[in-house]
Amino acid sequence: MIEIKNLLFQPLTFHLSGGGRGLHLNPRESRTLEEDDISPEIDVAAKRGFVSLTPVTPIAPEPEPPRDEPVEIGVDIGGENAGKRRKRR
Image (cartoon, rainbow, N blue to C red; front, side, top):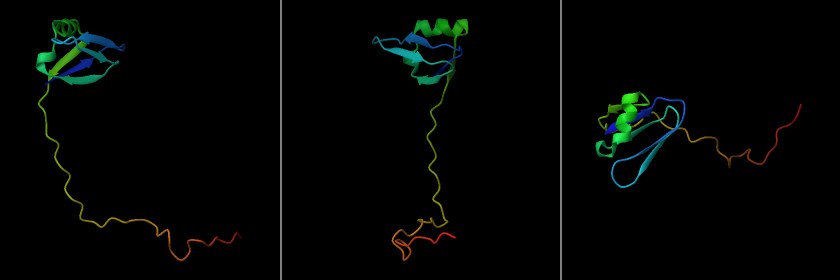
């Protein structure tokens, strides 16, 4: 996988290799692409300093460990004071 980042403060549009697909990057936006999607147009833009291309290794997200503390549900809506109003003083 390759991360492509728009280094300019204006949007850029590129053709991807094979299949007539395109890529639109907003200013300073990053996206990841497959190595097969990098077209000669993107290579030229990288040489001119319009975009940066950096290899990315996919990382599997680590699951969160379960929480040991009890979770509070909240206020009891149907309690004894559900229909009563407070006095104004």
